[in-house]
Image (cartoon, rainbow, N blue to C red; front, side, top):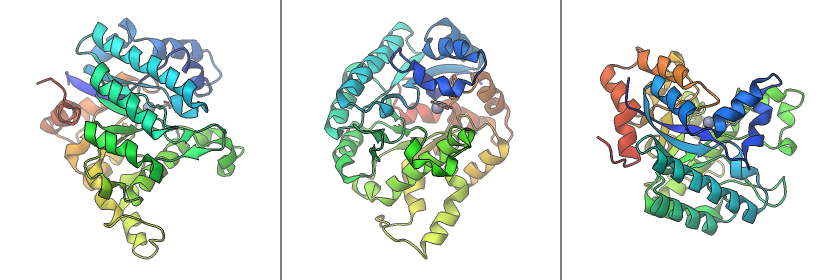
Amino acid sequence: MKGKIAFEEHFAIPDTSEQAKPFAGDSGVWDDFTREIMDLDEERLEHMDNSGIELALLSLNAPGLQSILNADEAMNVAKKANDKMAEAAQKYPGRYGGMAALPMHDPDAASQELTRCVKELGHKGILVNGFQQIDQPDNQAYYDQPEYRTFWATVQELDVPFYLHPRMTIPSQARAYQDHPWLMSSPWGFAVETSTHALRLCGSGLFEDYPNLKICLGHLGEGIPFGLWRIDARMAFSPRGYRGLRPLGDYFRENFHLTISGNFNDAAFRCTLDMFDNDKIYYSADYPFERMEDASDWFDNTQEINDEQRQQMGRDHAIKLFKLDLE
Ligand code: GRE
Ligand code: ZN
């Protein structure tokens, strides 16, 4: 399928490129990987062409700004990353757009940079890499915390989607992963960390206060569609501390949007299609952690959807979600 739109497509700037090193493994792939994640020119565009991606909304690699302890330093890197995305969008019109990188230490500063990104740079959404570490490595902020309500007010007002992207649990919290570093990152820990954060948002009353927020999750919803029935069933018995007014599944179904990034599997896709509004499921790849060609080979051919649905998920509904000036 041609004309696809993808929006979990990562890049790095020199300030963040070293962060992904542990994920590249011990072999010689690190040099290739660095080249791929830094590149916003011919090589990336060639992969996009080969896999039928017309437009990629770029985002900073994980953990990005969220592991930079100092607020000023993180803002400095944010501005460079956000400017870089705008530059790429200008250099290759119609091929790139931006998902704002935001330091989340201070909700007001985050709102200000977001406003600059949307109004001045033309970014289409936000991508934040999970919880924010602030000042001390062990100080983690989750965005259901009350101090973030002013930030969410800005997001709702600007009406841009917020992509909650994975990052790893920090070492002091990772006893369950001890002696199993492989378990901590993208094979498993990413989904545990990110789904927990997403469920915190659902259970905090956030979507009662801001019912028009649009939260995106990758990887077919980080496992939540599979667990959704059981979550609501069990919460009938133990809803301790739950601050939603309606069942959690209502918020998840109404306020969330899911991409197929990095989860190119018919069985998982069937579950997501069954559990979730098909108008809020979208294409994305997760380059360079996944091959765009792999994402497209699967998405373009899976028999779980027909070609009309493919067109909607691959393109039309993303145009609507991001209010893109495209047909
Ligand atoms: C990803 O997006 O899938 C990812 C990162 C950073 C490290 C590993 C990884 O963004 O898989
Ligand atoms: Zn990703």
